[in-house]
Image (cartoon, rainbow over all chains, first blue to last red; front, side):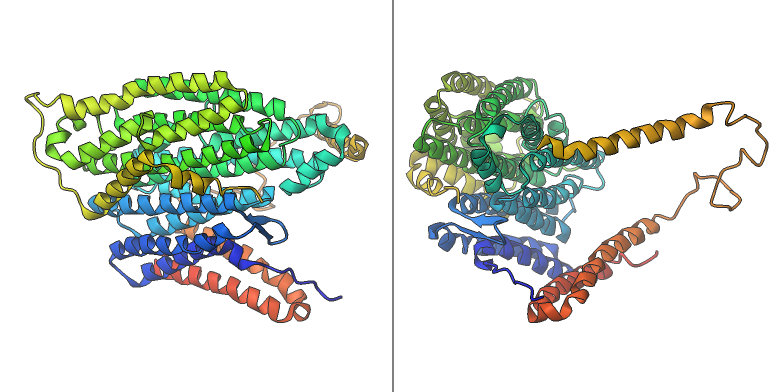
Length: 492
Length: 120
């Protein structure tokens, strides 16, 4: 019996393949070279190379490939860009941060690249099993990255906690997939959606509903939504700051990438009322408790960890807006979400870069008091930190404002005005803790017992903060090109 | 169809009943009268006499060896189905397997170079 060979369109997955090959090249170089800094630069330039195949893919029509397990559509490609930019910027931070702590090792960059490839696979996958595969490729590398600082107990704790709770979350996800497969007989998200539309009597099937609930719980763990967020502060605090920057943005974006695709395609027509309510409630408690917990933090790294929970809440508002009344509004919600994730990548990685720069040897995190007189010790860094804090609060004309604007706008269009209102109140609360950093930097300069020695600014981290600050300001003043890019993100 | 799952329910029922019986039977004095002696209360270790303490220290190197074994064991598993349909797959199979083997060799070289194989 002859075997039928599948036609595989490797070009559709070329950005992922480039990232994996890059990981192998870095691995190979790691064997030969004793200077690990070179590997960092190789990673940065290689990731630029991985951005190249995204450009032709953006203008191409959607291409399902690998027996409909993955698809290369605008949505996936825009997410590729988000992940690659995140990996690139966080590698720049790592170059300085790891060097200062004597942790410059090739493994770090290999793991970053492998994790990125997993995230990209999650964004492209149209099959729940492939989504799980991407989830695990991403997570296992992240567990190791969280515990990368072997001499620090907190880092080890972060790695172990992340591993245990991450495995727990994966189990929830798989359990959900099993239920959905039991109810519909497929793991392909298009087929699941199709099954519900052709078998209308099963549109209230409780088995599928349980599966969907478990699926949402699994993703809520990964994106750090309350009440599944307990690992977040410890993991983000204990992990090396450059790795925290990477996973706070990358893992969150990857979780949303898969969640939105599954909800929109498989469950766009069934259980919409149920999951809209569930996601809305998650959004409300995530925003509120993230912001309130962040108010109490004295450590800026921990404060940013709680703020990342709050940002997951704002993003969930965008997800809740998905079952909008018409197609235009739905596209608006998706592009708003992507815009928010991109803007979050710039401003959050920028803020973590500043934390990484100020973190003292042998210590984890930076106290709020470390920022006193930063405006005289290192005026440029103080200025960019001001931009990031304003942007994270959502003050115009920075990029964070437009992110919130598009998401809340989508919520209002989906008749979720109350949710948008809660989001805005929360943004106002968040101003308190973000701006207290600014107050420390610029207004407490006359204290006597503060350090006044200037802080050196090494080149890689200087590039990272300059680039992120530039985009934060540039796209804040003129968001049109970015929102045009995001509107290309349509499902295939 | 919910009725399709009746065998599963049946299976669950049989499993549950059997477990209850298997665990419960030894607790009935009529069937299992308690007359302990020295030989009976020893640890069962596949017919071997037990020795020492289970809380011994084991060299940590066993851990890397065991982990590497699992990795290669699972990866080599993919060669079997390929070997079975080798002629039908032809060049397609050879190309696919070369890529797979290349990845495997890079990983192997990496762990060798990094000293994962060294005992001390």
